[in-house]
Length: 241
View 1 (cartoon, helix red, strand yellow):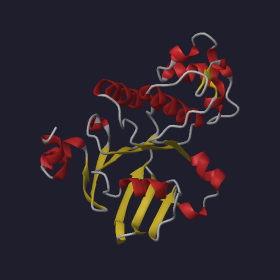
View 2 (cartoon, rainbow, N blue to C red; view 1 turned 30 degrees about the horizontal axis):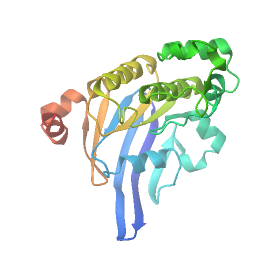
View 3 (cartoon, one colour; view 1 turned 90 degrees about the horizontal axis):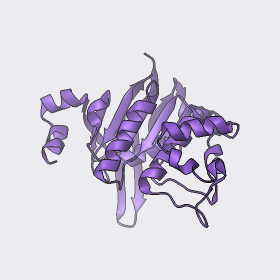
């Protein structure tokens, strides 16, 4: 399998009121086509900074990032959007119809395709009453945290890019809803290349590889079973649950 993502010796430094700090220190890893990878660690370990670099919120100060063997800095905005679907931590809900909230991700999708996707992600209840014409947001229906997560996943799948980046997709959810979201992700993202950033440990056994970060560095990586056998940092995290 060819590598979809190549992160090569990336370092990133930020300035704050209290001085400079190194958010990432010489980070390198590859993610291969069709591989599902979880990037974990405590808040402040550098994983969110890395995700921001992968979505080109910033460019790396040192090192390189490649998608499909092409430097990320050489991608146009349009080409990058075609390559990547993002499920953000904070999901925007617009004061518009359900249809319009979905068409943001796939402007040319048919109503039938939108309905099928809502059923696939477990949001068929939103089709009650006025269907795709239902008004969401201000003056309309508000969505729960779990429904917003499902809406973000629906948008990402409608966009249908080969690479999916997930930023804390179960943040703030109760254990039952978190399990439902993780089961949903496991089912609907088969065949995709997936990188999920999280500080939670539920559901990681289903990922091909887990990368553990601390203090801006990768400290270990491997499958769930391999990392438990090593009895390193990931094992220590699991023991505290």
